[in-house]
Image (cartoon, rainbow, N blue to C red):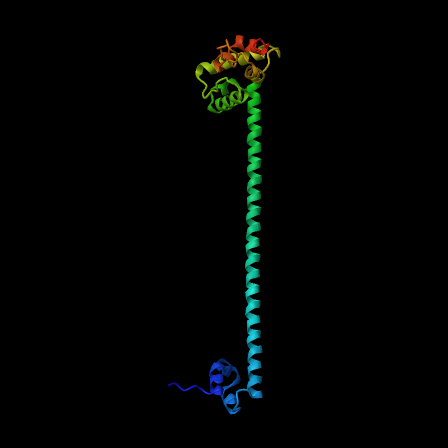
Amino acid sequence: MKRKKKGSIAAIENSFPNFLLCGLAEILESKVVGSPLFSSRTAEYNVHRERQRRKVSKRELTSNLQILTDANDARNRNKKIEREKESENEKESENESEKEKESSSQAAEGNSDVSEFGSAAWQRIFIAFFNRCVEGSNIPRIRTLTAERIEALRKLREAIKASNGQMRNTEFVFKQAARSDFLNGRGRKNKFQATFDWLIQIENYIHVMEGNYP
């Protein structure tokens, strides 16, 4: 059978960490664990331990606050960079939109130089311009401008300029055609549907401009 340790010895062993602070010799000399000396040393140890715990907690709190501050600063910097990028993108979009409007206006008024009619940039602009004018209608969209189409547009441009303002611009006529029931093939007996090639023929262009196709 194992002997049960005496209460004073068991208390000393259980309180061994306290000895590191209080001094084992002093505790043993006190004879009794519950003596004033033991109680005083234990209290001092507990106060010391509480101070250490508070110091550690304070350091952890300071460290956490610094981490939060750094994270917040980084987040603010990223937001600022994103706002600057968005602002730059908006400016670029506005500039591109203005250029497109200006080019579309020139295409509508027939003010582009003759040399531009054959350029790839002018063709892209005019194709987008026409497709936007007839958007929502049954008139087929176009994807390319052939040499024949470019030549027909050149003749139409010259006719508009020679009319001294009597002929409306292409934007008006294309949108007029998009609103026409007849040119969109609407109606029981109507099987006709206008196309880009039909619209840019000078005679047809004038008929649409004058409202002959309701």
